Length: 89
Image (cartoon, rainbow, N blue to C red; front, side, top):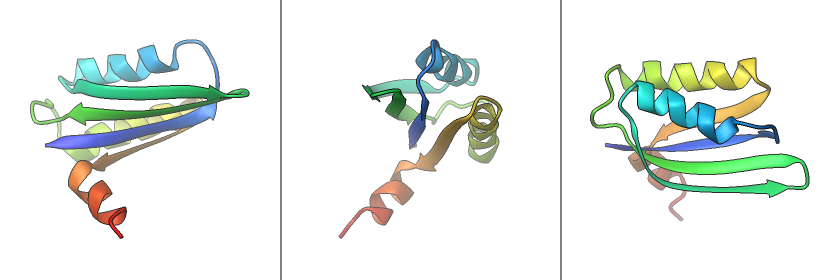
């Protein structure tokens, strides 16, 4: 199963590294990533393979969401199938 992870917030050093570290700690493989800085705003989308995640998907999502709240970032984790269904016209 794959997941889409989005991160948006004020740019600061280490956002990509910290989100990637959380993924690595839970055996989540990041397969694609795109990021950009729009003036002082950081925007990133990751596609991640969560098939080997060592915790439940909802718990993994909660960990990233909480990290975002603690660091003034908006982080959302969504099953790729749900994401695709939501964005299909």
